[in-house]
Image (cartoon, rainbow, N blue to C red):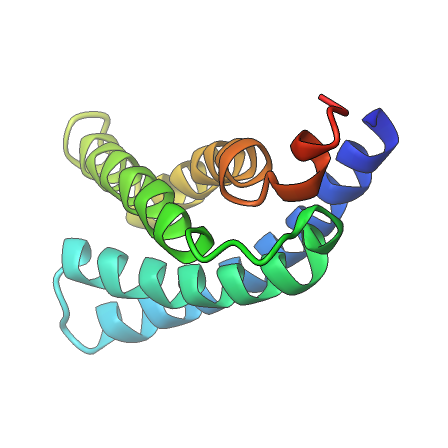
Length: 135
């Protein structure tokens, strides 16, 4: 069980690195073209979220999977909640703590990753693991 969780976290981190590249790439592209910070954050996060769902469902948590039609809805709910939290945090870090935008984005990305792993493992993609009583 602990080994499987470690392997899943490593896979989740690899997917997260890819998503971070997507997120930061879109975020930077939007910002440099005059898009407001919050809108850039929402759009770039959404791009990373779509990529993340596809990769985590098919690779990271594939052993836990049943044909759960609720997975996409759960994933969206968990990620929208995380998006709201990290969006508030990024604005607080920029406006109250006076961090540079990119530093605030890096910190918030790390916070979001931890929250998303926990919600993905224990709620969105729980599937077979819990149904067999392993947890």
